[in-house]
Amino acid sequence: MGDNKSETDKKKAMASQLQINYLPRQMVPVPGFRPPALAKESRLKHPNACSREDENEFRSAGVLLEALAIEARAWSEKLPSNFRPAIVAILHGGVQVEVRSLAQVSFDGIRIEGTMGEDIPCSMLAHQGTIQLVCYAKELDELEDEELERAKNPIGFIWADHDEEI
Image (cartoon, rainbow, N blue to C red):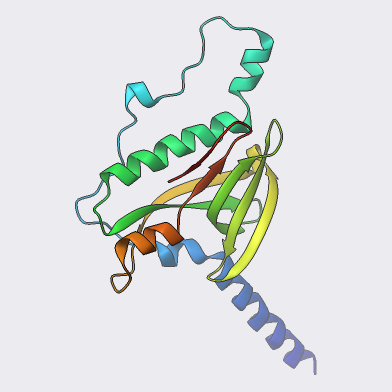
């Protein structure tokens, strides 16, 4: 009886691991593509002299999301037309979430909406220090209309004063 339980546990653990290791299965090479260089004018600038409030704001989750939006925009401009940028959030413990939207919910908190694995919808709240964000190229479905495919899979960024989809 003990062997059956351990086999069942092993199978459940393997199925769970497949959901967690979603990212490597979705990444595809893009012939001739290199991630865009970080253009000097696109860098977020830290002021030379600033107040404590300005210094703290520079460390906020909003600034992290702005830097990520700049990166996704640059990828979008440089990728071939049959690809789009995608973002995966990797959280503590290895949980991977394909991002649909990111929102600053507090000074250092981020709300991540997306899917785990291929089809498990989720919404997570996390401290910005516990998230790794990976931008990668995702190939569009060649059988779908290109504009429709891009429209149904945008990456949303939400700040207190504006929203943006890439």
